[in-house]
Image (cartoon, rainbow, N blue to C red):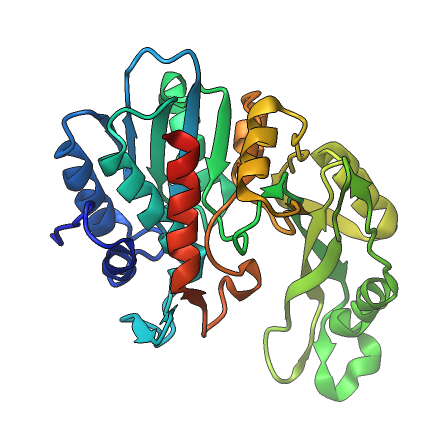
Length: 352
């Protein structure tokens, strides 16, 4: 098991945790290292649940905040170990979101008497289906450990505060046909050809760009996978198109589903995964204070994050962390070293 130095250089810590592979479902080695390091901090109470690790101060402060980040990454693609290129760390997880995790780990170790009580949450399975999410499991198993007045999720935000998040819904649209020998295709009905009507709908679709509480969101509706056919000489009798809908937080999941059923009226549609968005909540006092400290104009989070889960618990939450979110999941993801240090300094100033 790797030893994590939580009191040294935060950039070196980022490299160390990035170089411990933790693709979703394989977080144990990193979770073990995080747990061991945090249990070495006498001022923290530590809980382990699966591959999620939670640590908290118990100073009797009137306000408690949560700092949370996920340990897992999307699959590695020849982009580990991390390469340091001048003032850049390049490699899987540098942006999404181990630089943010490193910042939080160092805060947990160094801030023994923060002005708020702080709960630090490091969890698994964020990059896969919502049902597997480690933060959701903590909500079910240990809700008392997540009680707080405000939360910051360390997702990459390019050093600004990103309010709320989009909701996400995955559906599959099934188009029927009739099988036949390819040499006598007129005796059947080609389901893949018929699926072109679904693609026509997607090509013509104009996504909304609503403004919610002063922040502009940009929706998206896209086919992400298509399946059909059983052999090279058989007319396919079934074609399935998988569609992902990213919707603004002025719609709940029921409204999002109703919209998709209207858009794809006449087609067989099944919802396979859903997660609600979260409104910005920047009018909350703690959020206003943090935005003012960061000193940059807040933006809408264009993507789903676990601020949605905190919103569901009635806890105002924002996204804030080093790295450009547009680089998340890309093969060449990288984080500028100065952004890591600025994030650490801003959060230190806020909590000290």
